[in-house]
Length: 553
Image (cartoon, rainbow, N blue to C red; front, side, top):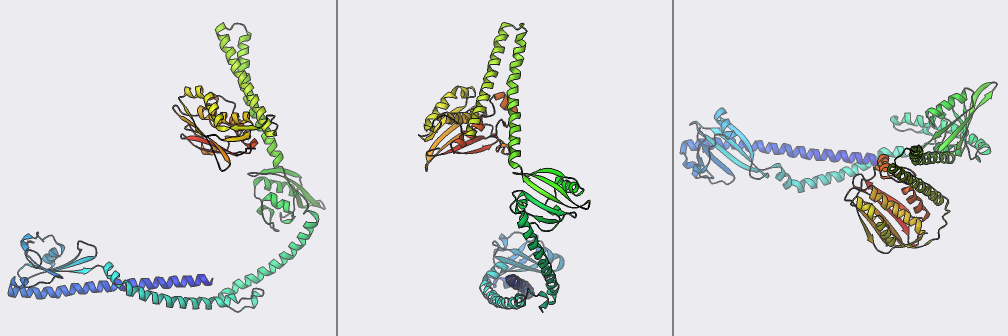
């Protein structure tokens, strides 16, 4: 508070000081400018009398570099000028001060010279013979004046600021000193600013409330430790007014809160399902419900507490069922996806077989149907093989022996195998890098790289490019498969490694595949303790990198 008062006082002082200097400079500048115009008016009166008495010869004797005198005819023609040849000057009838002099007898105007650092003041007066006498003089603009005075002004401001800092420090210390000396243990015994009296009374009342709550909390804590602290399940006891009577640390963990008081339980959780559970249990019914958060799932079991046939509260037990719910969810999703993926080729096989069963199928169509049945059967075999491989990787039951594998050589072999497929879309496959060896299962590594490259070709654009980059540094081996294809939307990039997940289902079906390719890549990377990373932009391409330790696994 001392710093805040001191800082505010200094800022106010500095603002007033700078504003005062600016106002004084502005007022003085306007004053000097008006004085200059008045001087020009007096001088014009003297010169006009001299010209009327002595003629134009009077002007030829004037040689003042700071002032310029011009005699102008009523039609604007320059008769004489003390600086330039009158015949070379243009007509001055359009000049503001000249027009004002013709109309009103005198006129003044201010204009900048060729630079912004000087201004020229013009004063014109109409003489008795009708001619216009104009006098002009130059003077520095306010910027130049301020620059010239900046040193003395800065000195004055610095001295004033130092004095202000000292005074502000003294004042703020004096203001804060009584507050720092407050006895908060006995707030009502302090004699200080009247404005703080309500605050001190409030503090005193709060201390009494806190003392009472502290005693209640200690008692509740003792009961809590004796009965519920060793429970893995969350435990809550509420009264019929929904106030929390007791709880354990597991309940706090499940509800994701750091502290529970004796307040209404609805302040802890206001969800619709939670309110429904409280209403039902306080009406005398046993009730169970489940709630799902982002990464957890809890089951609430609420039982009413009776006394003389009246509900006086409820006991709520909270169970963590996240693991079982996730297992069930994965099982349902996997079963659904497998059923769907198996149903499609089986339906096709069944349809073709049914047509051929009738015996009326022409020979040429039998060949086509047989080919289609064969393709669908191969798809089924591939699907089952992929599912079995993922299961083996999940269970770490791969029976293949590990060996030293050169990922660069393996990438060259895979690029050659995909050559014909890439030629169909005129896609160029480049293998970039050098020898990079890891220890792992060659068959799994082959399928990982093949699936990445196969996707890079399938989802590429015509005349696209696929780069397979293999390099090793700092004891790590990195393999990158980069393409110039259709890319993956940002919202779906987190899910592409899920089993059977397809970004564009219609396109994926047309291209073919089991939908397990990237899932195999993910599980293969996990098997080899490798890190996998995906970067993609729609319509620009996708890059998938896999980082292996130098000795892999």
